[in-house]
Length: 81
Length: 81
Image 1 (cartoon, rainbow over the protein chains, first blue to last red):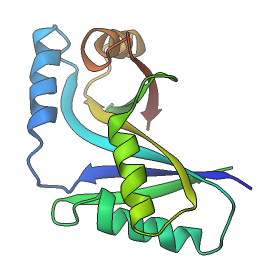
Image 2 (tube, chains in turn orange, yellow):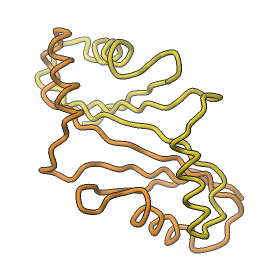
Image 3 (cartoon, one colour):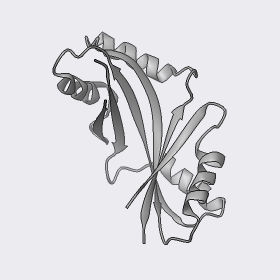
Image 4 (cartoon, each protein chain N blue to C red):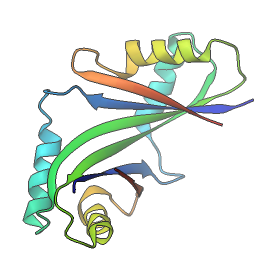
């Protein structure tokens, strides 16, 4: 049975987000002053084929070792199906 | 009243995702063969201050004109609070 893990990666609170700041400025330049802050993040959709057990531990290890930089980023995982 | 709009940006189906392919290969090199595909995406969390009406139309315009490249990317928006 296949399932999908979606890994969300965010900068930790207090870590400067130059991309978010630039986008916020661009939004204000478009005339939309109602946007008071922008934070950027990324996500990865992992298709998991054939349950082999301990999927959540394995995905957690993939996040810690490969996808997220634990010094400046937090991650969270959501499972679909 | 403040609310938060989260904009998710994905590559359209069929558009090559070199970052996803590279990550998939790295995951396999870690010994995790159960991951059959990886697609990458990004998201932006927009804090919306002081409801000025038509927020959803404005956020939609921000997505179309600034955040997403409509040639190769789709976007979706979720509102919190």
